[in-house]
Length: 144
Image (cartoon, rainbow, N blue to C red):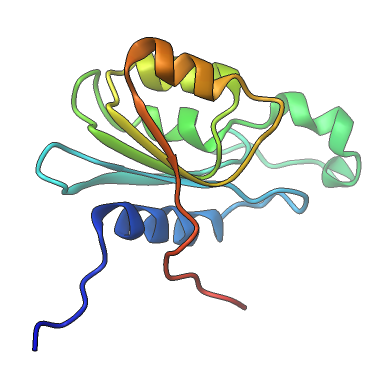
């Protein structure tokens, strides 16, 4: 009997989920993971503040005020590779419009996400650029 093996989409989504656990954002924890053309892990990332920045007391209390300072998981992830190096990206939340544009600019061919983001134009952008955009909800998740 052949053992059950995770699909590539389940594998990369599980990696994105684990990365989300590192986010310091108390309101929304988003993780992302990238695979190359051989399905090897390029990197993982999560939403948060710029590296080395220590938030002052009270920073996290006001979501609206601090939101403009947050770096999205997809942007942090793209800082880890060059254009054309990543084939597959997974993110725990559908990319926002700007992040989807960025992923297209980096030549990503497949994007998987777990949660819908209604305010995003990601579906239209993916269709225009020929990028596979697919929701994946069946993947291993760690619960604390």
